[in-house]
Image (cartoon, rainbow, N blue to C red; front, side, top):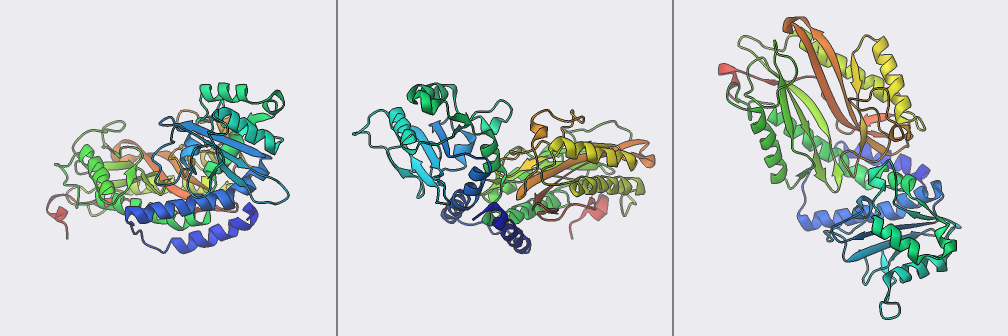
Length: 440
């Protein structure tokens, strides 16, 4: 199925999935689902990507416990790592025929990659690989090497040396970097992935809402560290992983900057950075809560306005997503519009998917608002997911200084517009103090 045909299907599945609740499955059922997703990606997503990038044959290999990031996304769910020296070969025979999925290994790799190595006939695994490649006579032989994208640079120096030694001079001259294909493979989402991704994001929102409530926080008692550990423990209880430790911090009127360690007090503006992993998909979310002071029934007007200004910055950024536009172009245009609107923006968004900081275009970094060479020059493609991560600084009179609102929400770009996977935070979470803090 071509990428062009797949796009509306993904959008339809994504819209339906937003209405479904997260239901953690048993480990075996989850593994079966993961294998289904992997096979779908290999058979329905990858063919179009290989042809888009003009790659005839892709070699992905790893030794046990030194796995290429790409190879890890192709292993069956019951493989915890590569075995011995796992060599995968994906060949496009052309003329619209199906891809070949081959394993130069003693045994198949999952149900799709069939073993094509008989050590009794050819004891040398490298020579078996070289013979397989020569028999297919591809115009391009792609391997995972890259100067700039770590996720596309999984081939070790030893493997690079041994591969070149095994190939004939003719085949060696056809070796190219698989950088663009590796990035495309990692960044492009499938229909089944998008049926489940919104559920994971919804669960993240639910856990943040509970963490930023009086269920977890007792002002004057609870520390930022305790909230972070509560989020991690709740994730584990649901059978979910965290790809980084949840970080909770606070801003306090009269004090500059953020405090990542301390007791949460009435009047604090609190912030969380939280990410979950499930079915190899990752979330990355940042939200804010406000701890009411005695006598307050809502946050002060200045803090509410600061939150609204940061939401406006999100709108500016997502409205500028266009297929083919680079991360640096998207950053520059969005910052220009934000500054013209009177905002004080910092934009540092990134792709999201099989990795938290995923493959694809870098859209600014907090310390590189002028753009990021190479990684920021990568263009936007359809059927990709992003962490819409940014901040806006606003002067708040009643605080006697600035407040920085840092937001991060997960979204899907279908090639036409950006849609949040489970909505976004537009109002502060509220934590009550004193007698009002009793959970009802």
